[in-house]
Length: 235
Image (cartoon, rainbow, N blue to C red):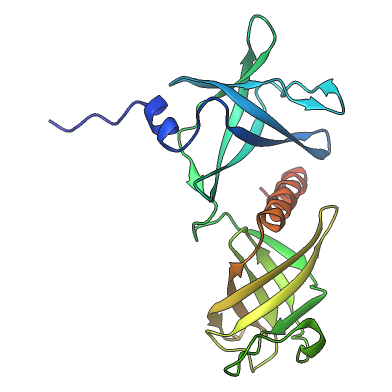
């Protein structure tokens, strides 16, 4: 007889979802993305009770039934899940969100990717040459390219530059509309050469050094991007 899976409550607790932890929740409100930070107060197999978020000294109830993007940090790693608001406690002190069926690490390579058409402020090589990497004042000429898809784990560049090679380390400075600028270091993990239907090379890059703040900006941008694509019927 196959072993029964562990109760969801136990699984969530093993991932650090316990009373007293801090959790960040993002959701779509009208045509904007709102974010709030609150505390987990209660965990059961069916739901997670969080303190009613306070934004600008006022309660900000979570939109009932709407999708929520939740992130938290546990043992030095960032975790995330998608859930929905399902109700409020009788005394009004807690918002209940559904216990997620899946929680994944934002450090995993399999990130959700979205198509983009973003021109970086700069993409440049990180020159080692047996010594320290180049500084901002010593950067070699920028690589002309466009970011054609983006995730929290990396991006894909479209370029005609023939010199970029697998294994190279690059730096990127990228402005995300309505979100802010990200700075990251990355490694080239694959290249698709031009075809009859596509003249540019596709350079696939994995982020190797990126702050949680910059990763949060990417996540926020992707939520906005999904909203725009859904409105246009592209999702």
